[in-house]
Amino acid sequence: MLSRLSRVASHIKPTTTTTTTIRGIGTGIGTRSTGYQAKMATYQTDTSSYKLNHTMLRVKNPIESLKFYSENFGLSLINKLSFPEAKFDLFFLAYNDSVKSESKDNHWSDREGVLELTHNYGTENDPNYKVCNGNSDPGRGFGHICISVDNLQAACARLEKSGVPFQKKLSDGRMKHIAFALDPDGYWVEIIGMKDSKPEATTTDLSTYRFNHTMIRVKDKDASLEFYTSRMGMSLLRTHESPENKFNLYFLGYRREEEKTKDVEAAQLAGREGLLELTWNYGTESDPNFSYHNGNTEPQGFGHICVAVDKLEDACQRFEDLNVNWKKRLTDGRMKNVAFIQDPDGYWVEIIQKGSM
Image (cartoon, rainbow, N blue to C red; front, side):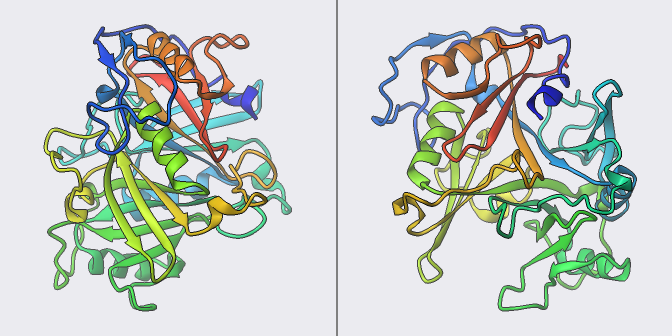
């Protein structure tokens, strides 16, 4: 599958030049974790300018998937890349139709909150083809994508009226502030309310929605947090601990100007895009036989997350000096404009340059 993915990128060129030093765990500002033996260095790349650009999911039938995300959640098709010689298409969706959108009219590679749907030709006609949604074995690893909405109750009522299936409705269970819809392939779509969500509201405005976050499960929280902060340059923005249920949630992203505090309020984070949620279940780090599925071996489903950087070659040199685990270096193969890193659990992180693909 990597050979197919490597054909996605084209015409990447270096852009701005900014100096930065290695960033550390926690806030992602200033200090370096002692867990790394990498030398301190100066690079012509600024990790604070990076963007968590997109999440890739494989789909069986693109017509059904595009209709689902457009009609039910207001996402627009902002780019399509076709590779008939390799028999696959890529569809890039985002919120782009309103002045209320976070990145209206930005190039698809220079924004956050993008959903990439990958379609391999012929799967729509194969009665035996089914993607793995990541929430059952075998194949447990990826959890869900999340859409934040203006008025939670009204948004969920609209979806129910439209016949959208749910993994969990608002009225189910003890947690009345979240719901999980199911897309045509069975991927979970979490639905949460924004800060000003009004329970009494009867209408919802899809143009205000946000592709808020992507959730993946991790085996060792310390290893994963160190990777995403010290190596990828993200900040740990919020932590939710649930010892009674034996799990913690960690929300990471590229810190914005208004996110000054170490632990950003959940309501504030609900209003933005480009977040990564790491779910850690207690004890997995101590089990030598435990591992999660990265979605790129059978059964396939989730493909990767993607980080868009300011200067591709300098960013990759920094990653090289930090001893990341490469799936594909920038210099490997024929495609010299895209790279893939593997995180501690083997999930793929694509690296592209902003605004040039």
